Amino acid sequence: MDLTHIDEQGHARMVDVTGKAETVRRAVTYGEVHASPETIRKIADHEVTKGDVLTVAKIAGIMAAKRTGDLIPMCHPISLTHVEVDLKLDVEQGKVLITASATASGKTGVEMEAMTAVSIAALTIYDMCKAVDRTITISSVMLVEKHGGKSGSFVRPGWEQTIG
Image (cartoon, rainbow, N blue to C red; front, side, top):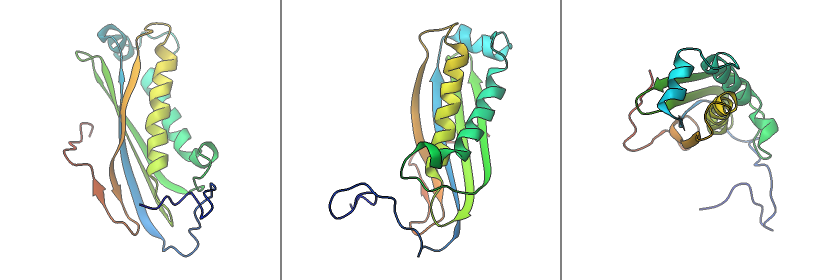
C-alpha cells in the first residue's frame, strides 16, 4: 500500500488532487466518552457548572470540522456543505455516544473532518466535566462510513448505528 503523503524520497507532502474528479463525499465517524454514571446524570440534568455540556460539545465539533485543514498538516482545506454532530447519553453505562457526519462536493474526502468533529466534541465534554470526574476517558474514535470518490463506499463491518 502506497503512502500518499510521502514522496519518492520519503519526505512529507500534500497530495496533489488537481486531476481528481469532484464528487459528493460523505463520512460518518463515531466515538465515546466514558465517565461515572453520576457524571452522565449531571450532564443530562444540566447540573454541570460550566454550562450545557451537550450543546457546547456539538458546537465545538461542528466548528472543529470546519477547521480541520488548519489542524492537520497534510489535510486540504475543504468547503463543507454539511456537518452534523449527534450526542446520546447512556446514564447506566456511563457513556456519551458521539456520531459526526461531514459532507462536501470536492476532490478529496471528508473523513478527517468527521473524525475531528467527534474528537473535539469528546474533548469538550472532558473539559467541561473534568472538575466533576477525573476518571473520564475517550475511546472508540473510528470511521464507520465513507461514500464518494474513486474508492467508493466503505461501511465498517458489524457497524450498527446507535444514534439516529
